Length: 170
Image 1: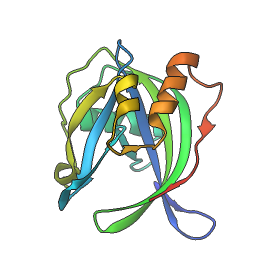
Image 2 (image 1 turned 90 degrees about the horizontal axis):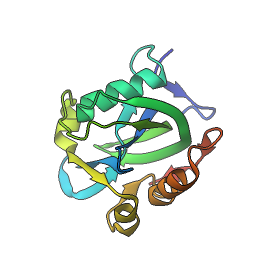
Image 3 (image 1 turned 60 degrees about the horizontal axis):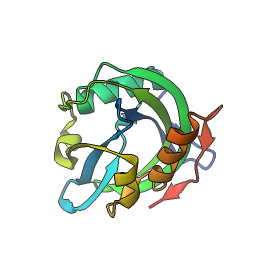
Image 4 (image 1 turned 90 degrees about the vertical axis):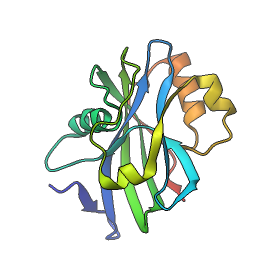
């Protein structure tokens, strides 16, 4: 099965696994991305990416995390959230079905080890954020309600099952 499947209206939908990675201080790791040809058009996002071949979403989450951050000492937990999104990036429209996995690590040093050519042109680094910093941030963060979602996660623990987030179309 391909990692991109047409949905009911024929639009290719990319299957994506993302990681809500928390350190022992409950900080979340976000990557800083931008349009390849316009670093001023930037945002923060969780590590993750599309499935390759016949890998599972769990396998993709761990692979992407290792490639984008160098972090391999991870306890992968449940799927927290699911969302559909559509956005322009690098000259095309991306339509994605994203699953966000909770993960914990004590490994806080990051080093991108296997970025694609496009990622090398569009990922500027990584940063650990406290929930309070995220709530005060003026930068664009995806998903857009991440500060609120993280606060709820830290206060209440993981949901009993994945929460379906609103579709985001940029």
